[in-house]
Image (cartoon, rainbow, N blue to C red; front, side, top):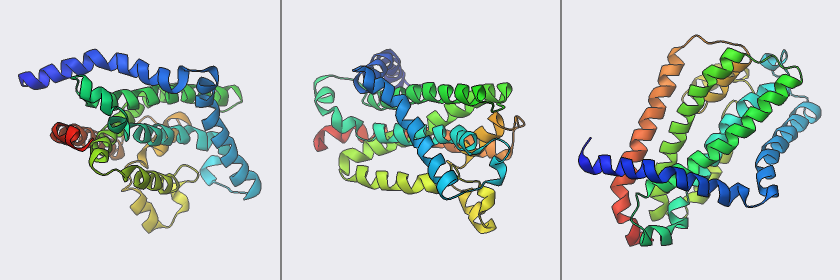
Length: 265
């Protein structure tokens, strides 16, 4: 690693804990209601989906019959929340901190890292709470699967951070990008097998869904936590490659564009 890159990495390592604490305090810990809402909102969303799809539409998922709809969706739902909220929070980070970037010499990517990490930590706490509640209410979760889920979630964090770096850098130059991304995330939620199983789709749609890098995470977490399937597959290698590629691309693109931020802010 060259000296400038080593110096930047050292700065990020030194500053990141401070900005992560700042991110969590500013978003959630300013009030008790803010912290509570961080847990209540996802749980309320899960309850809403369960009510609408199970009790109103009478939806039936063959793979969910043995564990129940709430457990089947809940195990997968938090993977999507971590990605979508992490990306949404990272996207406006540079624009929101224009004054700070102009006054203080710091690597701007630390702000994106803090936004994604802070979001992930809060959602990880919420995810742990959901898993505890599921286990307490009779869902048979695999303990070894829960341990194996940790690297999967770290891999998801890498994918989210890489995507966040790309979008945060582009947002400086394309100001309406946030609106476009939110629409894509809305469609993406329903195009990812969270509320349903991929096996419910026609064969051609199953193959197309396999191209969605986020398809892997809900399916993998279900396999680990609900079925205890620990054996690695080619899908694991594919997803790991996509996450690493997204992270490296995000770092490269962000550093290429960062010198031009001040001209457009």
